Structure formats: C-alpha cells, structure tokens
Length: 490
Image (tube, rainbow, N blue to C red; front, side, top):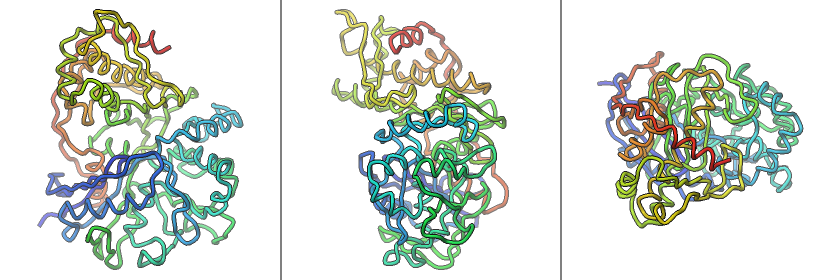
C-alpha cells in the first residue's frame, strides 16, 4: 500500500487539508473548515478548525506524515504556561504601521535589508511585537515565547500546549518552525539562516533565546528552533486528541511546515525562472531564485523558500477583495462580474479603479482608500466599472511583478493562481496587463499541496516530483492599461 501524506493550509479564511499519495501526489481525499473574520483572532479557532478539517478529510489513521503551512507573520504570543497572551495579530492587521516606521528610522532601510532581506512594514511579526510593547506593556511583560500561526499549530498537533489541554504540557523548548516563516518575522536573516537577537530586542524590548538552546531563563523570550526543509519537527510518541473528534496517531511524522507562499511555490513546483501571481483575498507575486535578493525600497521582501533557496515576494492587501467589493456593489457574483467586464474594452475607456479598499501594503500606504477616476457619462455603467475592477486588481500586481524583475529575478514563466484565476475575464485581462503568456495551473489547493509534498520529502528522504497540469493564455499586450493605472495611482 502506498504511503499517504497530509498537507494543511491554515489560511486567513479557512483550514484546508489534503491527503495525497506520497509518490505521485494524487489526491486521495480532502477536508476543510472555516476561520472567523477579523485581523485579530484567538488562535483556538485555528486549532478547532484543524481538527474539524482533519475529520472532514476522513482522519489521519492511514497517514504517515503531515506538514502544516500557514498564513505568515501573525504574532502568537505565549506565556510561561503555554497560553496565548492575547488574540493573535494577523499579517493584515495594520495597527503596527507607526511602530514599523519608527523601527525603519532607527536603523535605516539599507541596514534592515542587509540583516533581514526586508524593510519593516505593519505585516511583519517584529513590528507587531513593538506595537505590543508600546500599546500593551502588561501583556508584553507576560510573553515567554513568540510563535507564528503554523508554528503554534504544529506545536499543538505534536501534543504541546497548556497543561490542562495537552498531554505533553507547555514545553516552550519544543517550539519549532522553518526558514520560510522565520524569514517573515523581521528578526531572522535568510542569508546566515539564523536569528538576529538585537533586532528581536529592538522589537519587544527583551532578550531572546532559541528553543532548545541555552538554559531556560524567565527573562528570555523563546523563539522557535528553525529546522531544515527535509527535517521532521518530531514524531508523535502517543495519540493526540484534536477538536472535532479527530486524532493524530502515535508514529505520525510532523514536518517543519512552511509559510503560505513558500507552500504554494513548493506545491506548484516553482524553480528559477518561474514567478507566480496569486489572487486570494490579498495578492502576491513570488518566485524562486538561488541568488540573494535585496531591495532597499522595501517593495520586494527577500524571504526564504521551502527548499533552502530564496523567495522574493511582493504582497498587496487588495486582490480578489476588489472583485468582492465591486461585485457586491453591482449585486453579481464573480462569474457575472467577469461577463460584465468583457463587455467593456481594454482600458475601460479611461475609467481607472485604484483599489486600496483596506489601505495597502505595496505600496506601503496603510491609511489609503480606494479611488475611481475617469468617470464620464460613457464610462459610468456596470460593464466599465466591472472592467476597471479587474484591471485595477491586476495592474497593482503587475507593478509587483516589475519590482521583482528589478531585483534581477528572471521571469521565463508566469503563473496565475488563486480562486480569481478561474474567471475567464481575469485570465484575458491578465494576458493584456502583463503582456506575456500566462500559465494557468489546474485549480487546486497549492499551499496545502506544498505542505503535503514537504511531508513526503521528510518521510522518504527526497523531494518528490509531482506533475502540475496547466493551460496557457497567449500574450495580448495592452500597455496603455498599465500606463493609465500608474498615472492614476501616483
């Protein structure tokens, strides 16, 4: 019987579980559960959803290994008893924007890029710790360890947590993570692949130590040990009961897991020359390169990927969210919005939507709002507005692609993924805005697939090759669309 492996995607909106054949990647079964809305969330909801999603996928009784991928950057602060100090601040919580600006001023952009590969913005864990230090000093004083969403879930799955909720209790020295997620904290160097203790102290105002290293000290805050991409976090010595009547059985191997974008890259099988544009609620542009990535402007973050290479990435807060907002205004779903968009010409006759509905991360404008320009009697109708929404979403990401290319990354193949990539109008407009062939992989949960592929790697000792089928939309360059967007977005 073939070995089965499981991959988990604990995203902002939901928890997805995919169970696959370790050798071929063929999907055996899947499950999911929802997460609550909000940018500040009690992590217990993620734990409950994980159990529910595992049960929905038919359980783990026949699964040999699992890895968890999760939304990056979120701050999960734990006290000495393994309890969450306060609701986790998610990556899209912008309350730490002022803290990020102060941290940049203190060191300068070039120093931050040299030490971490990024320039602090509100998304990163370190800026959230500075906010906690300044806004909630009592909570900051209680912090005994800082984890990220996938770290914390993996720790709980392995049997750790508060003594009254977990068989192994609050062993903070068991916390572990991977390089891709550590590289989004703002206090880990993806070149040296080690923590920068000075930057952690700059954030929280307290010294740190790596889990399992040195002597436990109540004055030192624990940060998770970073394990290698093909190294197991651990193997369950006994069964662990999960919410939703699910069980993780003794002998289950738990891989290091990944940040969500690194998970998608691994699930897609990206290599040098491949760049993906992901259209979730938020948007990302990311690729894989073996060379160091530096961008003092802070537009491109030089994260680590899930294999030991680099994952240059640009992130926007507004992607499929744009279609949701405008679709809601027009009382249509995504499919109907796309049909309307295709009724208007490329460039929407000059109507431009700058879609900063919830502020924006790239460019770094956390307090920005959306704007609609070029309204005339001719353009103020449903079709033109629908077209402007699709073009605005994609133009923002085209600027991200240009920024990635400016760091020296070669783009030989452009992939478009995410739920919105299934929309025919989005595909057609993407070929116009990006001005190149656009490869559309078959629909799938690629973050969870990447986690499953990593689990197979850990289990078998080598990274398996899993085929990903795709269709190609030929290039249809319309540079005027991006030009008028850039003029409007200045």
